[in-house]
Image 1 (cartoon, helix red, strand yellow):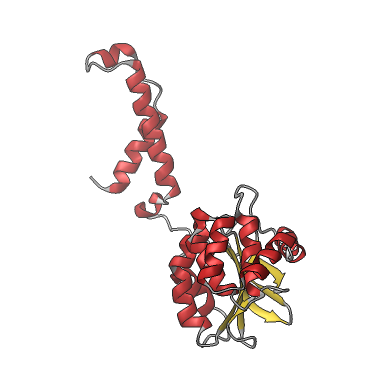
Image 2 (cartoon, one colour):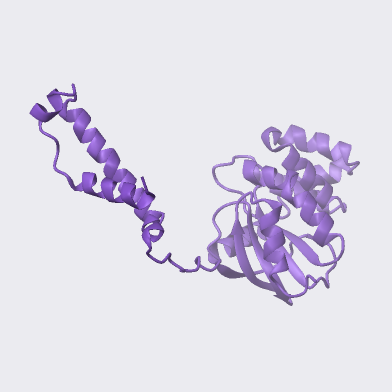
Length: 253
């Protein structure tokens, strides 16, 4: 049977009234079973309509284009930056150190993107903080990364915190400080003073103003001075998504 005939049959059955108990009795089918079958047929019909099955019977398929990616503008601000300052393109990430999706991204796509775009000087990568209220250790971890940055170990601490996302806390911060050979008293004092409270609060405020509420979130585009205007990407997306987005922007050739 042709697919168009199947579609027609399904459509007809989906419009039939509920089968009577007397008719169903001959085939040991209850009204509930009959109603369930009719409901399933209706669901199948709706699904086929959504998939434009009608086009297989000679109707043209929809040529509507997907919705364009959302565009936003954010600043780099005081964010630590990886890569060349004069790189033609910039990625600004808003991250939460206790977020499992941030961890997934950094253990996978980030490594390839750093190798192919950041290290060759095509992209500069800025890290901004967005500790979410649902993660009790995210804020303290943001402070730990910034305090390590005072001793030029921001990116090393950042990577270590993300890798240890399920073990964050004061004890772990101290252990990582020793592993990175930080001046422990200076590091601890920075944490105790919450020295970067203003900068972290500014990151959170600007994320909210740009409509960014989840992590990890990325703004990918060209920069003019402190501002970056570009495409907003959200979630632990695969490297291929970032690769395609960057290749679609001028300056990466």
